[in-house]
Image (tube, rainbow, N blue to C red; front, side, top):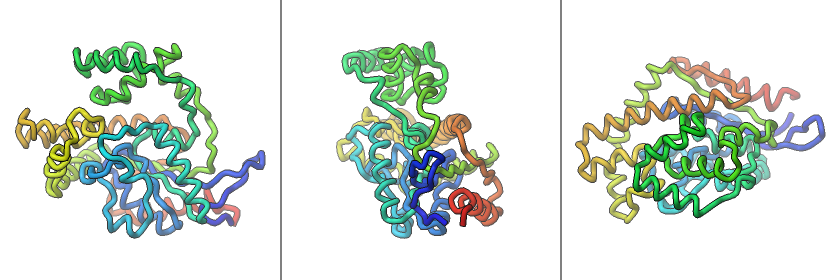
Length: 328
């Protein structure tokens, strides 16, 4: 039997670390389940969320609490200030290092999150250097967005790459620019580029996806937003603004922050900000589900019925044991 974090062997005798992955839309219940699984399989958790890397952005990103992180080691949380750049290639590099370090300690690396491209980049070893960069082109697109608005820039992407436009929110200007830049440099859309990435994982993976009836997921989202407001999301955003982190930063354009910023800047009232955040979170969850449904190898578990938490947990435990320890 392999111990957690040790390697299995492929048909070509190439060693691969075991890698557990848990994905799903926001508010589906990944955190609670991940803590139980981590305790059962001696895991260390790697956050697969593009926003949890930022310090001081805790409530709006739904980070695991300090108490939860004390129970199970977590990685790639609080590793950047909100004004520092962070890209999918940064995540891939740092996550890959974390997997190696966790496995070297005899633990099972466990990625938990909802940022599909980030997680896929690691699971399938994407190569990002091929497309290159064109800083002049980037600056031209930034200027275009400032002059004509984010929607006009997003519309340019939709004309050449509708699939990427569906995945990316129009306010995610940095990633919209990158998608346009890939086409500019290679003549291929980002969708085509990703489709040609490696099909085989460098790891021996077990990927669990959580799904839920849409109506229940939306109720969870509304409850989560209300709880974030209770916990002090508005005050958290005000502290960030007071610390000099401007609304134009990529981090401050993140879900849960841009909506509250609009309220704090007097663009609309508190009630409208909350409703806007609920609506945008519902839309975000739909994009997450769309992304993950195209990801290979996911074993889906319906977690609509909260009363079945224990039975769902037992089922997932069996899936992991059969995947990693079936030769016991």
